[in-house]
Length: 149
Image 1: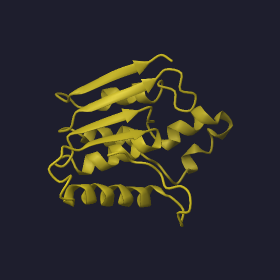
Image 2: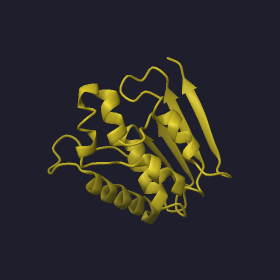
Image 3: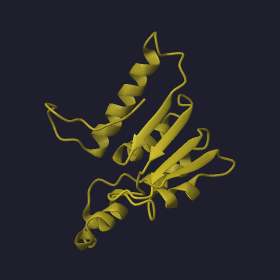
Image 4: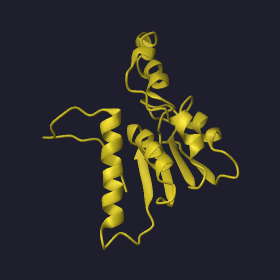
């Protein structure tokens, strides 16, 4: 299951709450389909999709068999100063939070694979993906893989 953001002719404006509802509905749909209901589900999320995946898996650990996170961030509020340093003083005013570092420790029954491109210019692995890794509680199964190019 790959989670993404709505584009194109979609109406409305994406927000944290709405994307979480969309992700939950998508998971429930996959679990009810005759051709996929007995399939092991692995959720993959990249960047913002990683934050969404963390929230989805934290609520559905009994339904998901794995989580893959690629270059995701700790929270939007910690990402803003990294992406746009002059806005660092406004980061606390951001109404969308995506609290990956607070939510990730709740995932205790699902193995997690972190993928991180060391040259990612939008979400650098330090201080984001690299700092999320320790938030997983032992005896959790987690792996970290780096891509140098």
